[in-house]
Amino acid sequence: MKQREIFITKFDKDRLDELIEVAETFGGHSRQDLQDLQKELERARVISSKEVPSNVVTMNSRVLLHDTDTSEEMTYTLVFPKDADIESGSISVLAPIGTAILGYKEGDSIEWKVPSGRRSISIKKILYQPEAAGDFHL
Image (cartoon, rainbow, N blue to C red; front, side, top):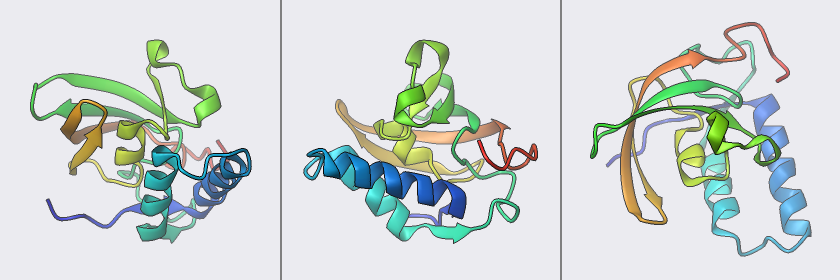
């Protein structure tokens, strides 16, 4: 599957770069989740919070996902690791699906490696995006 262009706000990129740096300082150099996130950040197009299209998944966005293999639908809020709580639907950006959806747009399909193999998901709808709501510093 061809990689699509992804977008990330400068505000989110700075915070995610800091997250990776702190984790590596405390021995996370060989963590695959950090490496995967770093690769996504390196290939992303960085834009300002006010320029990000409202159909792009940013940090703290709430999204409706569709698993194309099982037809299951899931609703998640993409959060920083300290705020993750799968029971309440908050998924860490370091979780495989969290890293996978960051920066993609509503309607995009993504294939991503997860512990149980590969998953194919599509972003069915963005239910809430902080920047579109005027919340530029969440």
